[in-house]
Length: 423
Image 1 (cartoon, rainbow, N blue to C red):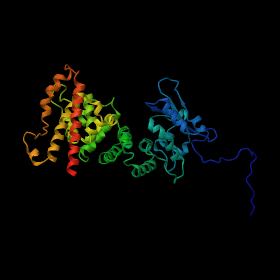
Image 2 (image 1 turned 30 degrees about the horizontal axis):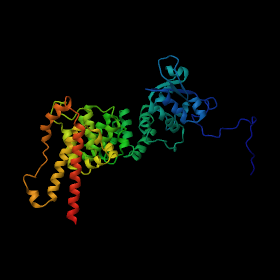
Image 3 (image 1 turned 60 degrees about the horizontal axis):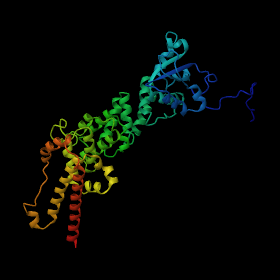
C-alpha cells in the first residue's frame, strides 16, 4: 500500500536528524532554562579545555566568559530544558524543586541558575546532562577520572538513578591502576566511602602499584597510605616507595615528613637497592643525626648503612665500578664522609667473608676475626660532628680514593680465592 511521502508547505524546514539534546542550538531547541557554572579555584585554561573537548557548535554556546560584576570568576553556560531536568525517572530533585517554585525565587525571574562547582565537577557536568537527556536504557558515560565527581553531582542535584549507575561503575572500575586517582578525588569531595575503598587497595597492593601512580598522591595522602600499609607490607616495599616519592618531590618533602615516613616503627629495615638514595635524602634534610648535627647517629642512617654494608657486593661495588650506576643508586650524591664510613665497614664485611671462605686456621684466628658492631655508629658520631663544619676537607678526596682502592682490592682478592677453590 502506497500512502505517499511526507510533505510540508515549507520544504526547507525539515525535522532534526540528530537526537534531542542540550547540545542543540538553544533557539532551535526552544531552551527554556540556563545554567551558569562558576568553577571554584577556576582558571581559563581548565574551562577552555571543557569547551575544546566539545564540537564547535557546543563550544560557541558553552562559552567561558568573565562576569561583569567583577566579583566572580569565569563561568560556563549550559542551555537546557526544564522537562528533562525536572521530570522523568532521571530527573533532578534539586531542579524539580527550583522549577516548581520559580515564580517565588530569584532564579525564576530570568530562568537562570547560578551554581559554583569544583573544577572536576564542572568537567563532569556535561556527562550528567547527557545521562538525564538519554533514554531510560542509556548508559552513564562515566570514566575513572569523572566517577567520583559524578557520584557527588548525583547527590548534590538529587539524581538517584545516576547515583546508582555511578556506584555500579565504580564497583567494576576501582582497581590497582586507578586507586590513587580515586583516593585523591574521594578526599577532595570528602567522600569517606570512596576514600576507604581506595585506601584499602593502595595499602594492600602497594607492592604492585606503579611508582608513577604513587608519586601523584599529595604528601598527606601518601602519609595516609604508608600508615595503613605498614602492617601489611614489608619494610623493603615501603622503603622503595618512599625513595621514589622523595625523588619525585624533592622540593616538597620536608624533614618532618621524611622523619615520619622512615620512623623505625614504619620502616624497621631498608631495601639495599634504595639505601644510598635514602641516605642522601637524610643528609639533605639534616637527618643523619638525631636531634640535629649535635646528636647521636640517627636510626635512619644506621639502617641505610647496615643495608649497604650487608649487601656491599650488589650495591656498593656495583656503584663504585660504574659511574652511571653510581648516579642512579645515589652513591655519588652522598657526602664524602659517609662514603668513607660505608667503605670501611664494607671492608670489614669483605674481610669476614674471606675468612669464612679460607681454611680453618685463618678463620679461627682471633687476630684476624673482625665483626661488625652497629653501635660503633654512635661512637663515630662525635668524630663526624667535630669535622662536619670546621674540619680540613683537603684530604677527603684522597681518603675516599684510598678507601675505594681497598674495597676494590678486597673484592678482587675474594674473586681470586673463589676461582682457586673451584680449580
